[in-house]
Length: 260
Image (cartoon, rainbow, N blue to C red; front, top):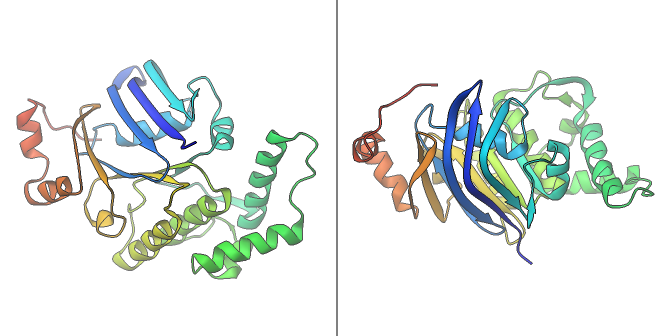
């Protein structure tokens, strides 16, 4: 059965202010969606709400993932169900190597399915990690570095893609993965995502700009403004934004531009 992430009339507040005002969106395994919108539209709020960040208060609606209402589930439970978030600003964890972090995450998932599971053996994990790193064209010494500690912007984003490759989620949300990347780093990160996209993985790319969508090409494009998806279409919608920006949509829906 194909897993789906269904967002139904989702409302959410941040520090008492309404940010999401009725978001509806469905993403299935095997699909690539792009969510675009100006600053302050609610894009990153949506990503955080999907993963259960407690700083965001859901005031209405549902999030159904693989047939399960996940609104009351903790972030780690959502992750073990197969939902993944690549952060806009990944946090550094000094003293914890990327390899140890990934092995712990794999073992947490295995024990969730079987409490008696002894965890993945070191040789088996090493083979898995080397295979994924070779597939993504990432140097093997990357695994021995502390997670995001001293990483460049591009290295942080590549580490996120490696996590996605190892954990093999059903649906991945990429929250402004292009943020802070130069063109070379963007191409490398996008290449890694494209290698992973397939029948078992659905992707939601959240971005301000079209440039990442020149490399990760979506079948579906959505425009989020004032906490709601106001337009949905195919890749041609990105060309409209590239040519005219968001101004025509502000005018069409009678909205006032906001800033983060």
